[in-house]
Length: 304
Ligand code: CO
Ligand code: CO
Image (cartoon, rainbow, N blue to C red):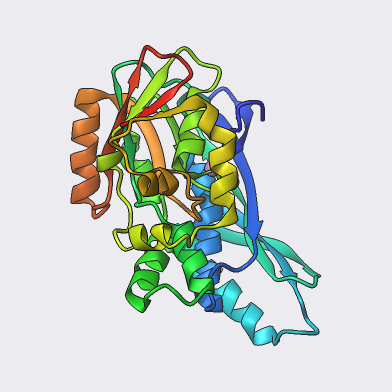
């Protein structure tokens, strides 16, 4: 918990550990089935971020029975279940309570060899950083609430949020990945900051290589950004240095809180090139090398 790991790991045997994680939230899209899909993909992601294999899960539901039709809940659970099936994860139970606000998510169990656990610490100078999904889902969710996001953009964002990080995690396995996390509520620079904080390394981010939804630049310039973006920026900015060549709208995107964002990981430069090629070949087209790990300045992130 001290270094904000994605999930908890408990060693059962010399060769086997369980990974446990729990995540649930309020709807970020209007369609209940889609919400179920996104929430499940998001909950499963923390197991994949540690390099583990998700095996079983339980539903967590808060539902306003007096205000909402039960068929909405059925659709949400169906979305979640279909996503679990896709992930080859077994639903083994769950719990629901009546609440004023709808919330849904999963508690997930995964397995891993104790020696293969990936944490957000361990990146080494000379490593390259790979990000597997484009940024901007928080901005798009905000624009959606304000009726400012086009149908096409929303569809792309939903596809991105409901995509499992399973494939990317499996593709990492044969490589010597030094550190990994998933980009969620604290935004890209927030989670990159966790990889750097309290370590002997620094990072250089190539902002022009970071994948994002092109349409959101305009939204950011109109001020269509979530409150969490400002909080993320305020919290992390002290360890970040931005080169004047990186425009302010891009800095905002780098702090955008993501729902079910991509994996961010660190590995040696030649390995990164190979793994990137594999990711692209397997359909993870947005994956990109977005920066490098440096020896100095320690504990800082340079965005250029
Ligand atoms: Co995480
Ligand atoms: Co999480």
